[in-house]
Amino acid sequence: MKKLIFILMLCFFSCYNSERHCKDFKTGDFYSEVTIDGKLYKSTFSRTDALQVETYNGKKDSSEVRWINDCEVIYKTINPKSMAERKDIHLKILTTTDSSYTYEYSYVGDTKKQKGIAFKVKN
Image (cartoon, rainbow, N blue to C red; front, side, top):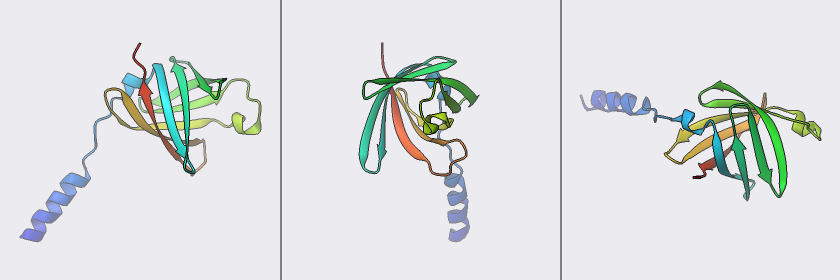
């Protein structure tokens, strides 16, 4: 009997999905942090329904925004200057809070994913 209760509880808790409020983060001004190979990278960006402008190390990059669903988006760099910038980026929002979201991203078709967190900037 104890095993049956344990299995039922395990099934119940393993199926739990936290609620995501991705629509709250489709547009606005944000601050982002990503750690790659132990190094922290910070950027700021502003996103509308169709465009994202990001500032990193004093340089601005603009990308077209195409939402797949409320929590997944594809970025296509406008005026790419290198082969790497020609690759589209797929970003998926994993979790949300009232002021931030955790995400994973990769080049489209690439299996190696990076994770980061973005904070909505209050105006």
